[in-house]
Image 1 (cartoon, one colour):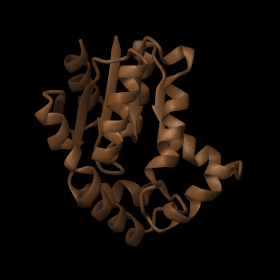
Image 2: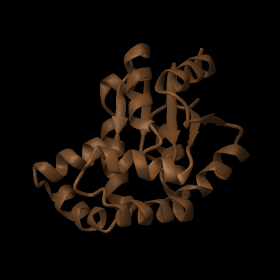
Image 3: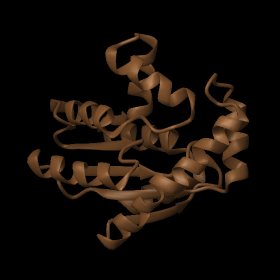
Image 4: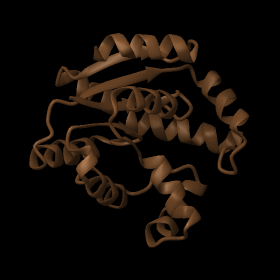
Length: 183
């Protein structure tokens, strides 16, 4: 069974690689970013709450994201595997996820950390041209990532679930490296 969690700064290629592997392994790609963007475009209750945080480059509060992830991983297509992109982002969320996976009888996840230098991330995100991707907001998101998300690397390393991959290479090279890890 494929149960992977992708970590890395915004713009590291988590979404691209998660989608590629999910298609290859026939499991759902669960992207909290995509779910949040859809909620924003539909102006749902969650989307409206999340908007003010995202506009400032801050993380959406745990409780909102946890509710969304719990609902998604409880769906039938996620029972036999998934690739999680964008969650967890904090140690608190990781503890929540660990407890949720135990409840859902879905243990055995592995964690992939895509490592990419900040200047490369800024360039990639500016090239996307999204409204929420100004250089100032990107640099703030990287600060938030370093402060709140990076401790997850230690959390998962301590649990011997972490694999680090150089995300600063071609998309194909990163995919090949990931395929070898999950083979």
